[in-house]
Image: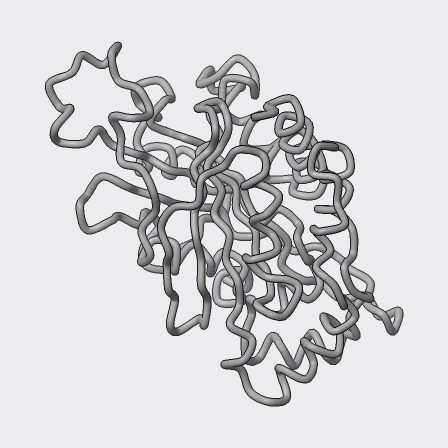
Length: 298
């Protein structure tokens, strides 16, 4: 396991993500101003997420090769019938690294028109691009995750996809761009260490919170709670030179409560292994909507 390579990849992802998503430094600055943290290094990143297209040479099967090589372990499968998505999560090789959640669009379940649009771009990828990547070169992986895999889409194509699958429209423009990172709120000081309290704090500071399924989404077992900001709109240039504002990325917040069998432990003894792990399909289903127009147009 080469954690040096993984550290380079993670640092590259977070640097570019913070540059493009103003909510990231804004949330961190609000936390520092409130005295919740002294600096960003005190934030535990619960997980990061990526979106992919389920087509030949791409999708989860290609993308996961990067992080499996870097020591991650593939875990549970999730199905999102309404959004036509598959997903898996991946456990990190060491606790200082975030979990990873990777989803893919079941392209073959879309209308013929939408499939034709998507494949007109993704068919440009004729071999699995990860197979040509040096997976022991952190800078090469970082560059790959931020490069265009197909040509810049036409605005008309983007708009047509948006009507059928907002996920498809997001990926056709953003490709492998980091979709979100996640603040572990349960490790914050008392008064801010629950998803509800932290979400209330952000709302009071003027941040727009995803309201799909309620502002705080809770798993049936009651021990995984999640919330997120609404994706910020970014001015983009399409292939035809037209400027258009689209949904970018967002910030998520997760509270992983202590599992019942460890409730007797002193707080000082509690580690990641004592808290709820994995993900919850119903929560994730609503978090996806952080980039959807039902949220961004509120």
